[in-house]
Image (tube, rainbow, N blue to C red; front, side, top):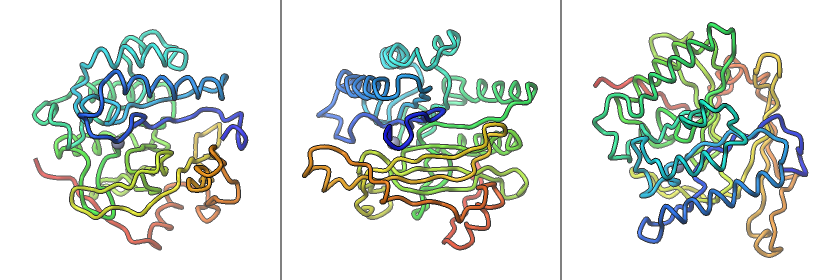
Length: 298
Ligand SMILES: [Zn+2]
């Protein structure tokens, strides 16, 4: 990507840096080693670029297990990422992105909690302050709310999904876009409450750098994917997302060469999304199969 866009305004690193390998073959120490290697590589290649990293469910040890109190992991990554986080208060609390792994339905540690790590409280006060300051907001994290299409698996526990979607739609006038990882697919969603179609935000889900073939619990193994990265064009004044380009590298050829070649020719360019406003995305959505997810009674 440095060859394609060496001076991006910022990089969203959406988590799952540790390998998707069975837990018995892993340890927290190995996860931290992998996160450290990727952190150092990004710092070397993009020394002057702000990076906003998230922890994925596979970055925790054991994978998926977190209630927000894993001090060794948090202390270590905050040390690695302190130059990017900058704000001492946020470094102390390790908060800049939303840790949606706390809400993941495969995480047994938060099944019966009310507000794990008091993140909803923090998130709401952050959004209130942003509204008072007249700011716009981009939400980023690892696991996205609502369904994993085309299966109808909900990623979040019902109580957290309801609260998250309500909060996000309440502040949708501030929220320019959401960006999450986890899916290992090139997707997007619209986040809205069924009863209030005015409160909606686009949710962007880029393809992964790791070429994992995902197998959801209620579905078949997905197709093979080449690694991908996404370059978003946005209006610096409003934050509005105008377009994005999708770059891929052919992993078979990369293995033959012994290095990754991000081919500018192998890309998707979404000129068909006029200004990627919510209206534009909604119109495009109707040309695809669409899957709707309702808030779940709890
Ligand atoms: Zn994940």
